[in-house]
Each structure stands twice: as C-alpha cells, then as structure tokens.
Amino acid sequence: MELKTVQTPHVPVRYFEGGSGPDLVFLHAAGGVTAEDPFLNALAKSHHVYAPLVPGYGDSEEAPEIRDMLDFTLHSWDVVEALGLKDPILVGHSMGGMIAAEMAAIAPNDVSRLALIAPAGLWDDDHPIPDLFSTLPYEMPALLFHDEAAGAAIMTAGRNVEDPGFLQTYLVTNARQLGMAGRILFPIPERGLSQRLYRVKARTVLVWGDSDRLIPPVYAHAFKKGIKGAELVSIPEAGHMVTLEKTAAVVEAVSRLG
Image (cartoon, rainbow, N blue to C red; front, side, top):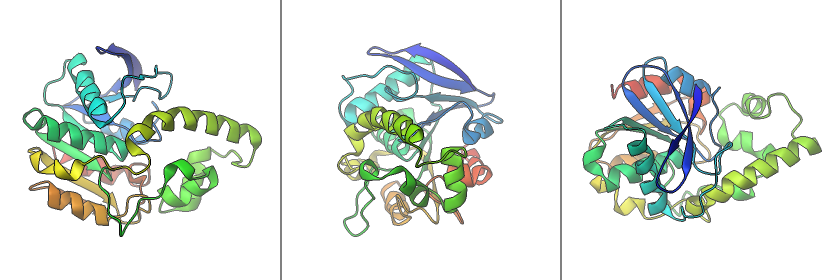
C-alpha cells in the first residue's frame, strides 16, 4: 500500500492506496491502520483500495474543526469527493463502521454497497461497551481478540508491554489518536445513529466475530434490525479484531458486494 495525500476543504488527508478492481474505501477503527495491515493488503488483491487516515492518526495533521459526528461524516464525504470516487464500496471497522453507517444514512443515494465490520454507533444499557479510554495496554488483547496470547503478540510485535519505553510510546500515540476518536466515542460511542439507520438504502453486509468482547454480537442483531435487508455474517473464533484473526473470511464477506 502506498501512502499519499489528498486535499480536502479543511485539511490535507493522508491515505493508503493500492490494488486493482472495484473502488473500495476503507475507514479504520480507533486503533488506526498501517500500510502493512494484512486486511488492507488482502482487500487489495481484488479491489482498488483507498484507506484514509482520520486526522490526527499516523503522520496526518490534526483537524480541530472536526468536532462532532456530523463533522466526521461530512469530512469523510469530502475525502471521497477529493479522491474522485463515485459510489465506491464503503467498508468500515468499529469506529470506521460508525462513520460509514452515518455516511450511508446521510447520503443514502450515494452509497449502494456497504460493509460494516463490528461497527460502533449503537448503545444498549443491558450490554454496555467497555471504555477504551480507561483501558490499560495489557488489558487490550483480551478485549479485542478471541485468542488473547496471539492478539498480544500482534499488538506488541514481541515487545514487553511493561517496558517503560514501550509504554511511553504507546501512551503518547494513543493520546493523540484517541483525542480525535473521543469526539465521537467518548464517553459512550453513541450519537443517535439508531434514529437514522432506516435511511440506509445500500446493500449491507454486517461482519461480526462471535467472540467480540468490545462490541458484543447483540449489537449485530440491532444493526440488522435497523438496516432493511442487511445480511449478517457471523465468524466463529474471532473477536473484535476479526479483520486480523480471520482475514480471509472477512474479505470473502466483503467480496459479496462486488
């Protein structure tokens, strides 16, 4: 994947691009995305992938004018327009799924194919979503992965999570990224999406790991109920990071859209 820059009305946006085939825009989760991401590279084998970074992620500029859910949604549409894309397949994971769903609800005639991978955006008092903003590094693998040990190895790349140097880098990066993500995810990841889901006209595929402990599968059924005709693909032995644990299965589900 190649890192590029595109100018939007408010801020230059860094994005990854690669592959060939139908145009596909991928919106990343609160943890961000890199050029080496296995899911992006798997998608690029059959699609022309564009993966914009939310401002404040990676080496991208921050954008103080992006303050709330509507700003995030319109900014993302600005990115699609700046890239010169018309009706790309829209794919979002977690926070990115929340943004993608909002995009499809606000501009229902501009999105015909939508894949939401364990999206945030809804809230159920009986099944509260854990607070990412108070979660410590060593707690993350159990929250995000079906296989906690494998997840820890992926997240740390073999580094010691108790090492002060690792913790300093992690906390600084996390603070910058989650400072931006917090505008739509804190204190709870809910900004009224449930009232707008009925507006989504796109053919929608929902993808969920059966072992998701961050956004549990009960939310999959809420999204399925809210989006007319949505198809739910449940993936066993996978947690919230289903894109890493079961990459091929998620790509297959997305590929149902074309």
